[in-house]
Amino acid sequence: MWTKGVPVVTDVVQVEDCLYMTDQIDKWQKDVKKRIQSLNEAISSLHTALEMLDDAHSSVVGGKDAEQLKRELEEAKKLIKEKDNMLARTKRAYDEKAKKLEEKEKELEEKEKELDEEVNDITKQVFH
Image (cartoon, rainbow, N blue to C red; front, side):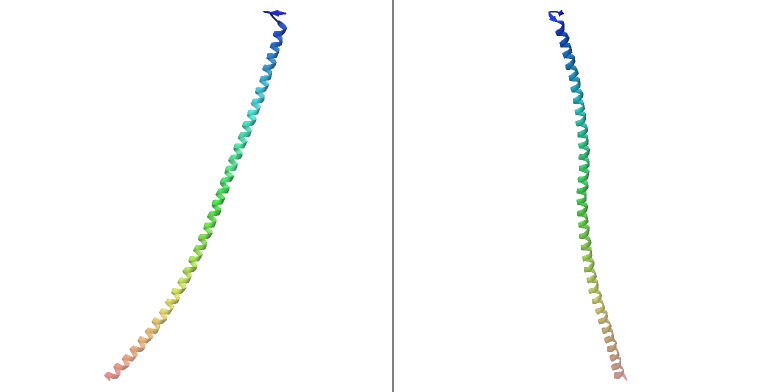
């Protein structure tokens, strides 16, 4: 068979080839779509993992900040303890000085009393 100078068999073969190629292209497109979907899922999974890693990193960095705060707190407690000890020593020294001053004051009051008695005795002797 001939159509327009070309054998019909050739036309049928070309149509079959065209259908075969179209079918192959459809299969390749479906395969590419599946691969793209698979890549999108992998990217999504990687994105989720990256977010989790970022959160974990933030926690670790936050943990370092917490450790730093803990050290600073311990240092502050140590300073407070040192200041408390210094305050206690100062208070003891003050209490000791205050006690000595009270003793001196009592001694002076007793001396004053003795002197007053001597003055009274002398006054009595002179005026009697």
